[in-house]
Amino acid sequence: MAISAGDETVSVTVEDFGVGISLADRPHIFKRFYQADKARADGGFGLGLSLAESIVRAHGAEIDVTSREGSGSKFRVVFRASEVRSPLRANLAESVERELKVRE
Image (cartoon, rainbow, N blue to C red; front, side, top):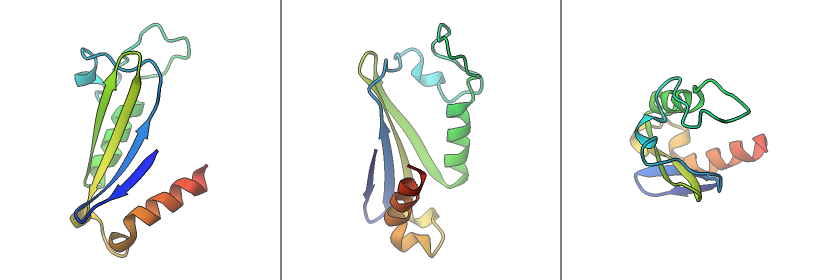
């Protein structure tokens, strides 16, 4: 996980080294109930990424993914400073990092 801040944005990046997401599946992963790997033993309902995208957008941010099969995936959430309400605006990167440490 990485957090970076610029003058206009703050981004949070989460990366894994799992099986990755195929090019054919990528356009669909944020759709409700979509499951890329139907053979997974642990199940799931296909709601996780749809909910994540809804929450991210409710906060005025964007989420994107880069992935390659066999190499894992990298999800990035980008917050625009203009969308962040004070008092967080000045210290958004520090606030996000502190919150993530509390959850570890």
